[in-house]
Image: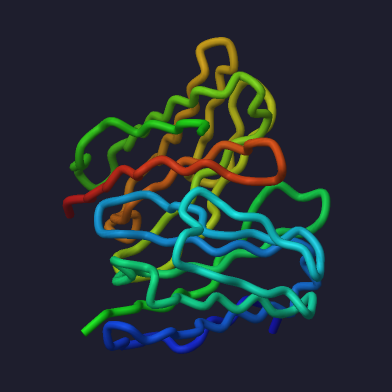
Length: 112
Length: 110
C-alpha cells in the first residue's frame, strides 16, 4: 500500500523537552510538508522540502527544526523554544508537477 | 501572505439537500484550487481540485471556479450524514505551497 505514515499517533511532552515526529512516504513524492492545526483553525505551514537535503521555512517555523536526508522521510523536531506546541501535526507530500498534497494521519502532541 | 477565506459559520442541511460552500482568495496569481474534507480528529482528505474557470463535477460533488471574482465554491448534492465534516478550501501559491482557509463545518441532519 502506498501512503504516508506518521508516528506516533499521540505524543506527550514535558515542558523543556525536545520531541521528534516521524513522517515517511512511499509514494515517491518529491515534496514534503509539515503543518500545524489548532482547534477551529486552518492549517499553518511550518516547514517544507521540495528535494532531498533542502528545505524552506514556512509561516511558523520558530521553535521547530527539520531534516530531509532521504526522499522518503521528513522528520520534524519540536524544540523547547516552541512556547505553545500542543496541536495536531500533519505531514503531507506532493508529486513533482502535481499541485495536490496528500496527508498522513497526523500526530497529536500534548504538552504536560 | 496569501489569504483564503471561508467566512460562513456551521452549515446545517437536511439529508438529501444541497450543501453549498464558498471560498474567496486574495492572490490573483493562484491557478489551482483544492477542496479537502476533514472528519473530526482525522487528517484532511482531498475530494476535488479545479484549475479552469467553470464547473467540475465528480459524483455528488461540483467545484466551481470564478477567477475574475476570485472565488471557489463546492456543492454537495444529495447530502448524506457521512458528508458531515469540515471542508477546507486551499489555493496554490508560488513555490509549490498551498494556502488554506479555516474551514466550514457541514452538519447533515437525517
